Image (cartoon, rainbow, N blue to C red; front, side, top):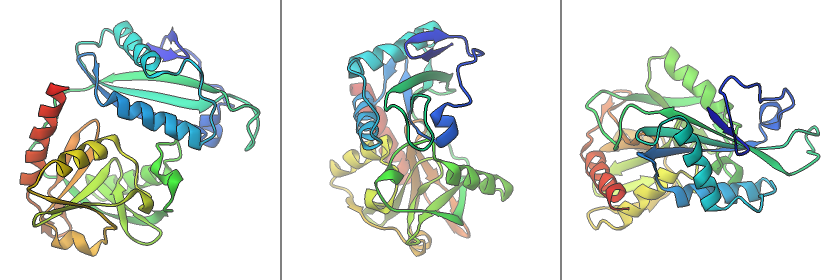
Length: 281
């Protein structure tokens, strides 16, 4: 089952018009959310990011689109799918309603909520190898639009194809200034000695929800100095550790970049703190 504008529909229902603006023009936003045993993780952060993104894209926010309303809509589809006792990936997609070409006839929106059961509950780190490289065929323009989770993800798609064809687990994206901004599926953090650095939003990286959680953990930890600054590809070879963050996997350590091997002690320590934070909230 899926939740389409508050109505539960069968997955096979023909809901997507050929004129859907998310399909036809990429005129859509989405939130990827983790729900653990019926508890929506970091819900307030997801909600306010969605509201801010809708305002930036000039979408009309319905009067009933409160935090409580959307939370209830998510729980409704979880209950319909008997998934309230599971770890679940929820996708909340908002698109402008059908009509118009580049210029929409209305700024009103439709929304769809889908779910997918995940194999694990709390965040975990395995000792498996995780090999990355740079994706340099196309670049991301720095700016506000690049920080949003829109349907315009063709660079991530092409980068994912490139990674698979070349035997990599992931790739790092560059902006037009040739600085690293993020991985294909999450934000990137670089550890060198006691300094942990991540690219600033101004460089064009996604305004990630897990990025925010990790930054909060780092700022509360006197063991490390946290820095938001541009990351050059040359810094990767000198780093002690690299890790990727997103709300589904939490913290994912990178083991290899070209001939460089990395440790994962900082990643594991931060993940323990993250799981403690989840249990306490």
